[in-house]
Image 1 (cartoon, rainbow, N blue to C red):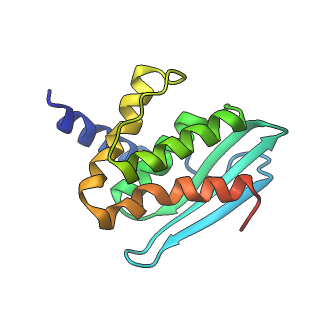
Image 2: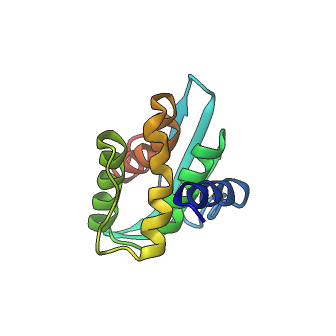
Length: 146
């Protein structure tokens, strides 16, 4: 199977079967984001206990890329600490800006492949916002900006 086809299958799977969709229990931070160009909306819910993410989920509507990205974000970062979360988030956002791939040793091969599946939007500048919206909302939720 070609890498491009694998990436498409990962995105479609997360879009059709999103992980962590709905409000997580006892969330104490949240943030919303909206892309007025295409109508995508996401609401990130975060249960933050000191520096640990106890719960992480989302609600939203939009294109397959925005839903898949929010699902991948929650699946990858739920249960992690804030240092790790900010590091991965910044690496993801830089990946889409610089047309690179994530290769962090702190992720499993499957997690790296899953996150890198979103790298295809680099070729479509109008879709980058779809892929990054949930990640920016997560940073806002951590900072408790609404």
